[in-house]
Length: 213
Image 1 (cartoon, rainbow, N blue to C red):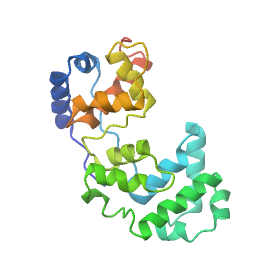
Image 2: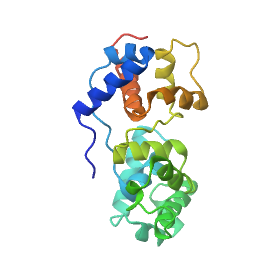
Image 3: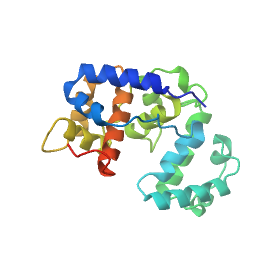
Image 4: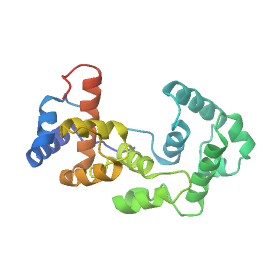
């Protein structure tokens, strides 16, 4: 487990971002305080992200509950030793069953040691994760952000972030993934805080807590 950035640290980063980017400052001024998103870490956490991708929230919760019940020993060693049929019986699709085994094998063969991941730089950690079959850049960046509290990652492929960026920049269309990464360069070294700010802004607008941009 890690200690997420404190409320004071997040506030200081928000003020830094607002000073660096007048467009983002308008969103910062009206977006309520938020806490850092914290996810399940290590091998189980990455497995959970893979299992829950591209399904509804209800389906994701139901499938993960089956996986937890069917894998009481949720370790790379245990998963690597399972037949694909067992993983399929837990509700995983055939591709996700392959990805689960790939994650386990990557840890066991040293290609992505979850115990050592924290010691790597952001770029090294993202590279180690995305080298695993089934783990894309968005998954790697969000996993590292939510499970290690890294301050300078930005998942530019996230649609909610892209939409919030469109609002901030008063643009007619959402930025592409490439454009989102480029736009976020201005927010170093607090790109993760910018992402949290934009997510918080997006959620507040959708809940009608603040006016649309």
